[in-house]
Image 1 (tube, rainbow, N blue to C red):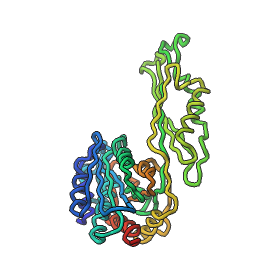
Image 2: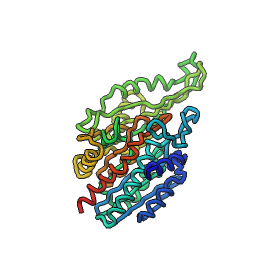
Image 3: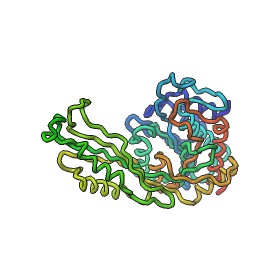
Image 4: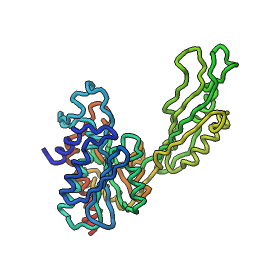
Length: 384
């Protein structure tokens, strides 16, 4: 068994359901320490974060990943136990196989091999891992980035090992991500009997025109990198369960995914204005609106990191021009980009992530370390 496959299997075997790292980072820290890396553990709350560095000074190239995974769901729904790595049909099965323990293992192997071949390389190579990417993402890279900002830790380039590819390794590079803004709204009403609506106030009826207005709003037109902002209601509930009771309150959760054509402030202001226009003042009459910004949008335009990554894909994957995308959900790259770093995401095919029987192609596992090492060498060793 190859080094990268062996490490991937060892990580999958550890049931590191967010935010439990289950010892994954200890295994990685030991391996990188043997390779000469300086290991720093940054634990915030119940979340383990690992910062491993080799070399000193600028430029700083960091690889970013997470050791936590989403729950497996019913184990009996899997063809093989979710935390027992299993090979069949040229694929490796197990929770985290694609998202993203194969990517983490590949980054570790690539970094160790690089420093063995170039022990006196210029600048700094680093690995940042968290166990809080799939969860609330509060005490993970968000907190680490705040600490880095406090200590003025520089990062010039960041490669996130998230599964980015669509059909074959290297066919898509994520060069940005949309921002995510969530609103949690409570609409107050007056509970009562459905036969006596004059003695009650139905918050569902009160909110319905506002919902229609919000859903019909075109928030922006997007730009050359991002599609128009999307508004989606993810949860709405009210009522006691009885069919003869007007509910006393309505609770709504909605989310914006937005690019650089809008801002957090503009979306909040327009939303609150629409609510007021439709008779649902979010700050009076018992109503309440709370906001949570999960992350700002970021975009890495043409530059050194993109050029090195495309060249490495051309060399290692035989793809002349990978697709450059800023779509998808969010990743921890949103916390590193504001530090001034160029950020891209590159990893295996993402078709099975979060699904039952999650898997990754064995040939992708074997080729990932070489792909990552090629990026490192183009940014550091070949620039020396």
